[in-house]
Length: 359
Ligand SMILES: CSC[C@H]1O[C@H](OP(=O)(O)O)[C@H](O)[C@@H]1O
Image (cartoon, rainbow, N blue to C red):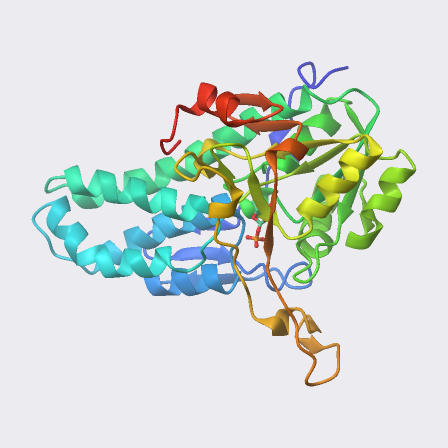
């Protein structure tokens, strides 16, 4: 049975919604506390949303773009303006603070650019236009994830084992997930026989979030230490490494969670393939190659502790880049809702996304 025959049971595979617009505030599932505590943070203004993005209450490239769009709606609540251009002028500082919350995931900049574009052209109905655009950004992401699930699963031979890194599921998006959406579709369609998740030090998105999501779905998964990935692949258990992305450059170089590059090197050495799954909102055709991506450096304390409990001696230094760049030459397929780029390079990326423009 292939995934196309199995009607996706979205009631089973797509129930988690980390971002919920409530009309007067934005409810964000606090991902710092999962899986031990399931609790929301209520953001009543745009600066609360900016803090939530920076502090990883909400995280995942698409999810932070969607959250920032709703943050812009909250910023508009306190503004009196005759039209969108006037409102945009008043909103500019709040939008800049949202955009500065994290530097690597291009979805944050992409979502706010969409908001600024529609606001600049809006008339007296700018509040409705603003809320409509935020909702469109969210609903389009969910549709993209479901489409990518089908496109990505179609690349996977039945009986395959897959390894995923970090969290790219419903918690990182509007729902269903990017790489985890492909895994959901691949399992439902009988393509994927074994799922491995690497724990993803230091923030443990794999151990705490991906494992939790797959448990909710009833999908058996095996957690591994990040450092065990090459050893697992050496034994032939992994046919695909399936990951998300925070920014895909015009030549296909891809920034993703730290550790992705190591997995890709091991995959190439051991004959496994690498699939990057991300919506076109993650494609940045204005950045030619990976050297142009700002890699977020976070507080070393995140590396020196687990769940806030200090794990090493006082005074030890730590270096905490939270993304790395996998060169396009190590990627076998980039799956987006607009289509699949196999063996990505600048020409093949331009053929799907157009040269040098924002996707
Ligand atoms: C579909 S989520 C994309 C991406 O975001 C994650 O980073 P973080 O948890 O720091 O926001 C990770 O890199 C995922 O692959």
